[in-house]
Image 1 (cartoon, rainbow, N blue to C red):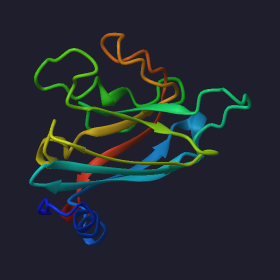
Image 2 (image 1 turned 90 degrees about the vertical axis):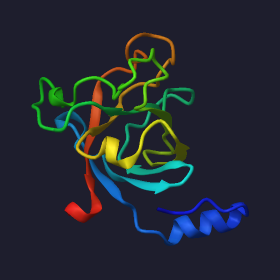
Image 3 (image 1 turned 90 degrees about the horizontal axis):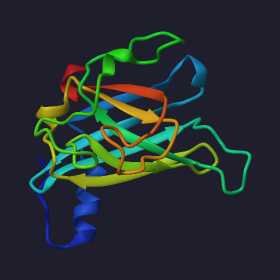
Length: 169
């Protein structure tokens, strides 16, 4: 576990040098084969730091087109599926406390595409790494509206990763 220090720059430095306790290798669906990346999970005494780096995201041809992608941990444990039904075994959002959306434990901030690339880091106390190892993480085609039940009207599942313990690799 990474200790949470009072000097913020020290905490960031500690995190940068730390080994993640879990990882998910992201791959796109059959329709979005170019998407790839990784999501790293670091347990701290303040919660879990989730760091995502993804490439190959769709780029909107419109200046004001959507390049914001919903990003969630799902209940299921497999990214298998086919072209007609990408990632059906991921099931719904990880929601052990039966909370309304967007208060599910698996609801994460969106990914903001930057010419097909996204980087995001967040600290959350909604779960521990032990809670999410064996589950999946999904990138959706649309942004999350943070209102619609049960999943934010975030659209098609375009990429998936299975969360595994680093010691299991």
